[in-house]
Picture 1 (cartoon, rainbow, N blue to C red):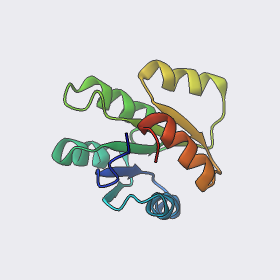
Picture 2 (cartoon, one colour):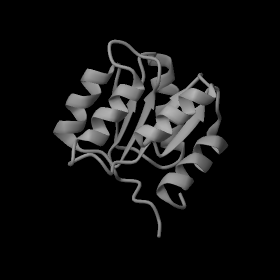
Picture 3 (spheres, rainbow, N blue to C red):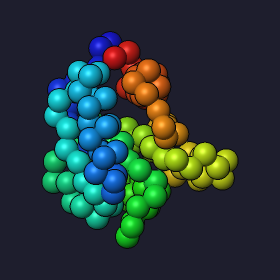
Picture 4 (cartoon, rainbow, N blue to C red):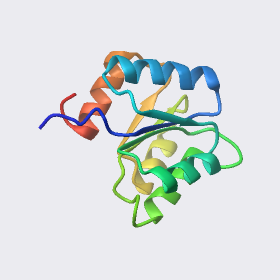
Length: 128
């Protein structure tokens, strides 16, 4: 089954350049309903107000980390099943394990390219 590329996508990263990069890659993949937030609390407010078909979040942010955001999303029955992909420069095994235990759907290590993003999203969403 084809992925509904009209779904709302949320990109969460405190680094504006990374938001622009991910937005550009997502648009190349055919997604155009893309919102962004620069921190966890702003992301949570958007998630609760809008609902998303996919969340891509950085790990290292303040005041709320991507892992804390993931846990908040998984704790809410309305958003528990939302596909959540962690995007991070941290390749430490313990981080990957912590994210998996918290319910992350996939994990992308920066830097990455369009092919990597397509492959990771295909694993989570189905064929793009």
